[in-house]
Length: 434
Image (cartoon, rainbow, N blue to C red; front, side, top):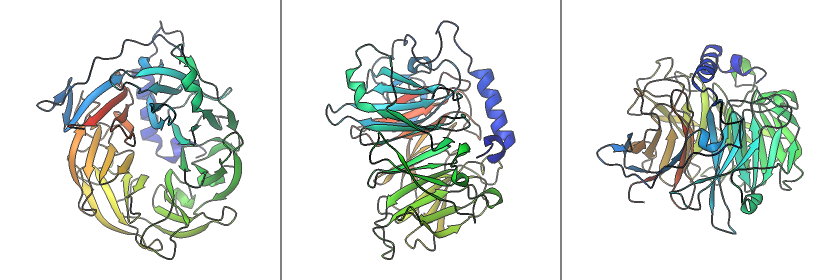
């Protein structure tokens, strides 16, 4: 995106920044971002009883622990995306938390008592940004930022976290890939060792905002592999990809089984492409859906038969009566079909969603984390929730939970809260009885 504000709606984004600046002021005693004295973490787990866990509305989910914005080194701006890493040498689970001033690394060796261990600032010369995205491949974190100038893709050897004795400490990047300046999101197919930066802008090879493909099989030396842009999609047929998920396809469509396929959320449509040949990727299908607002993000079920998608603007525009999740049947990759629209129990805006088995974990801004049972793929049902933003009604608004990470083997789920009008930070929760 050449200009994030114009790309996804100037009024909404401008308002978001206005709120961030006014509501997320700096603490004069912190001495700058990143390396601050962390406040004592909260006490042990709080169970969800009578719809509340330590004052946070809940159902079927317990609060394990929480770190506020300052407790992860953030002095100005918002908390945004997150990802996770499990150190197989030690068994320790780590939360990697993006925010306006960089990336914070939190040890969950004791999830009841998480430790803010390290901080990685933005690339030298780059700007702080409300958009940051993190993914992991082979014990390395890959980090991009949007509207951040010459940020590039930071590569961090996560094994250095084992040797940190003084917490928090500054974390150093192994390298920075400068094939593009800024990118809105980053996708990694861990099975193939390729990364896909999307929504590129500001300089370098932006690939028109589509898939900027990178060979990361040698994390110390990321290498440009090619571009893919679906010019039949995006605002003004720009081909802009806001987010994507890329897999080695193992679904029911025998024609494409075994190929590397990317499913792009392209502002106004779903785009499906075969990217097996990086020098000659092929568009398979692109299609929109009723009352499209802004096609934001999606995730496949584990059988690669259904894709669940969120739209960030339909609730704002009051095109729907509640939080809408679009259910696609992608059993024929050349002809994806919308088979259901799941309407949630609140009017909050849906943001990032992920799927583990038969459960879908949605970060829905003002209504927090929502857990949806998709065992009946075309008829989802909400089964649990934890609201990280309890201060107001669960309506369409730009604050609350940005993202979550539900893939830890321990069952701990990380949930970010932006910290607009509240302390925000990162919450660690679990399903009750887990």
